[in-house]
Length: 565
Ligand code: DON
Image 1 (tube, rainbow, N blue to C red):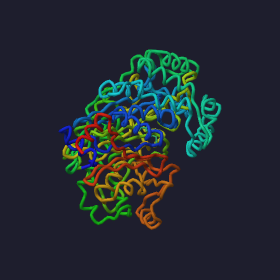
Image 2 (cartoon, protein in one colour; image 1 turned 180 degrees about the horizontal axis):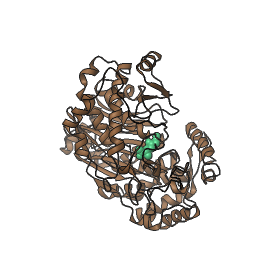
Image 3 (cartoon, rainbow, N blue to C red; image 1 turned 90 degrees about the horizontal axis):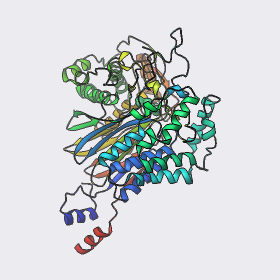
Image 4 (cartoon, helix red, strand yellow; image 1 turned 120 degrees about the vertical axis):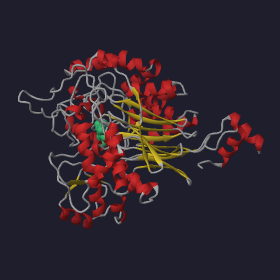
């Protein structure tokens, strides 16, 4: 039903169904990404073309998380079928299980977070290339042009980017070359990145092979040698993105199309939806974000995080019991353990919940295809190491491994053998780019940054939409909270809007510790399609922009259009 008069005419003329050439949409974490999607869709590109161009653009204008030096996941709905592309980073071949421990087996401060040893082998360029090989329609080089222009001519630095850059300057001071490249970012002023423009031009002209085996590869290896990092020419030459079976979870009369391992996000989101469904009666009396509601969700969250810590890792290295974790009888057993009145016991306690920047965008094209893409450097600006001569930041994704059993990572989550470091292994992620499909039609495209808070944020927005009937804008803007088993009984709230005083009081009385974290919970970019039409929303927590994109009549189509009138 998201047809406009023009597309109705076009559809009838071309004998196609009404979904053809209807309004497209993008929700992007900044305006440059949104405008790039619009440009590519107007040029006749599909959702995957737009996603590739947007990802390269964000590598320029959203340097805290957009990247070519990191990795991510792309979930695609294309011509009625689901796809999942895993372009997560891998541990370098020289990496080893205890590489971040000293001789007393203590974790060496910051080693998995700052500097050359923190980086996994980047997957983004290969991922975008493989997406293009399979689904792209516009020439590869054309898709990089908006990014190259923005790197060459500069973009206006937003207020919050200058602030994040300032924090990063302090964090990396004297430890990396971050300041040489990013100290000049000033809010309201143009920021140019000529080295990055040259790198992107080489990739545009020579494809992904340039990044993994050409001059860019040599610059990465030289950078690694300068800082005693592990990534070698072999690591780069061997890197491959992987097309995997998407996880498809039936939920009510929808199908959730989402990520499988090495992300924990798809299994976790499916468990959250499944467990809540099994306890619907408990939720009936609960108002949105009331103490009873927060407690019930916390009971569900802690069980999901317990499974995450024990069972999940790279499926090439560890057997992930995906079917078992999503089986109806298992979910029923877990649901039966939930205590609606009081907090269930937590066995093990570790501190620390932090957040930073990753980036997600959602796109629906004029033909109804959709891309849900989350990619990241891990924490904002990654390892802080810029590849000298190539002008881009490298990730600090190695911290997503369990660097020592039971020791929490930067997001406070723990793990064991399933997510221990091994050469060539992908580190466990929480990224959850997802698509809800009903009767073979896309209904929701959604995702967010937020580390371990990603799937609880996506889940809360889905709940706001489909249980509380909120309009998309309200569902995204509503205050969120988070609980992840550890620290024990801790409920995290966001500075954007904490829970009400009264609800906080009630939760404290139940035994929860209310914690106001420094960062907001996520930056949701969502597109919803209902019988009323298509809507796109960028989270008010960030600097995102959402656009509805009407089809542009080509000359041929205009003539056709004119001849019918
Ligand atoms: O893959 C993961 O789960 C993390 N590296 C994502 C990091 C992230 O979302 C940071 N942003 N808030």
